[in-house]
Length: 272
Image (cartoon, rainbow, N blue to C red; front, side, top):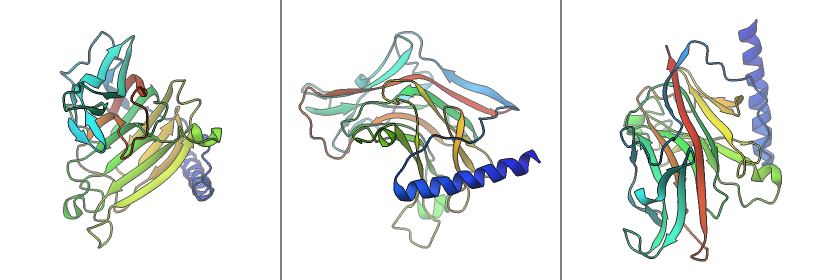
């Protein structure tokens, strides 16, 4: 009975998400609460101390990225938070330009529940993201439509410039792979939906994904917002866990502009 009710709820949520997507209206998640029964916590970092624990994390995609650079110098830990800062630097290690930070866990994971608690950066074209990436999600043959690897964007906060509060407080959930159809040149990308948090640029919210054998289930503040088994099925391979303050392709700011992505914790659970 409970399983049937859960499936019915998921169906109605999918319908709501579809119509909201058509009209561009994000909504608060109203689905079931995340259930971690049978799972055990296998990783957590609450960012205590005064520096990033590089025994478990590494700086990712260093150097040129879009219209700027990723640098380890843009990554800091203080006051119990991980802080990624985007700013213009005349004396940056790769030359003058816009700089930001991206980190990833040294250990890769296959399935489980992945959660971040954070305050998103307040715009400027830069956006906060928490995502998973396999080794070959964009390769037509190796991804095979998802089972060989998928990019799982648990959340991307790209709405800071919106005037409507419902849109401004929303995040985007997306999936990307290749091999879902016969066209190897274009990614099989799915915009799962846009969903609201609460004052996401000034308050902490949580964003999570339950990656099971059959589907990806997404949560905001512990409430289910969407689920998908995009293309030809979920990833069956280990994936990298990434926290990033993304650099846009075009930046139109004075050089004194700065913005920060503030992370309280990253946690991962897997079946015991």
